[in-house]
Image (cartoon, rainbow, N blue to C red; front, top):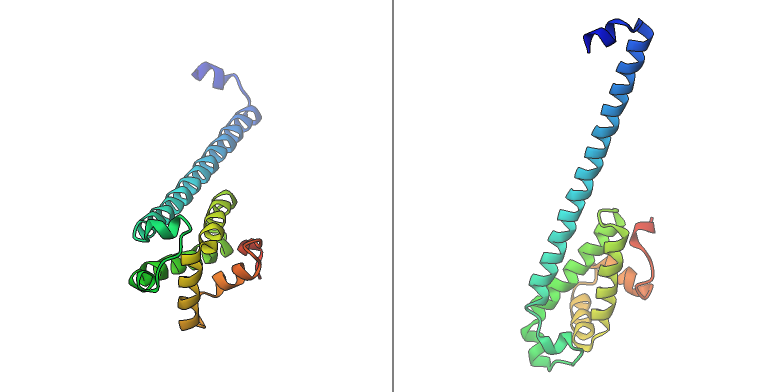
Length: 154
């Protein structure tokens, strides 16, 4: 190996060195990109876990699209509030581009589906009427019939 390098002139050695440096820089950038993707995936998994924990507390009948009695609705209003708040946070995070487009589509489809169910619709109406200055991101998305991508909001 030493004989190989000793037979090269300084320009050839510099070219090899520069090539090795460029290759090293490319590998470092790939590692950074991979680490960012893994961190975003972990963050999105955390959001999904939080969703499952909240939705688990909501009566199955509500998830199946059946209305709840007023008593049942008020008994589970906290859980619906947590869901409304989480939905608003997910929308906000998408507006900051902290959630990937593919993940956003899944979240958005889930929100659209849930908020069309009678119990969710009724509970969110109660919650939003008692807190008229909160949940602005959710209100805006609902106004667009869940069609807008919050990332494009100014």
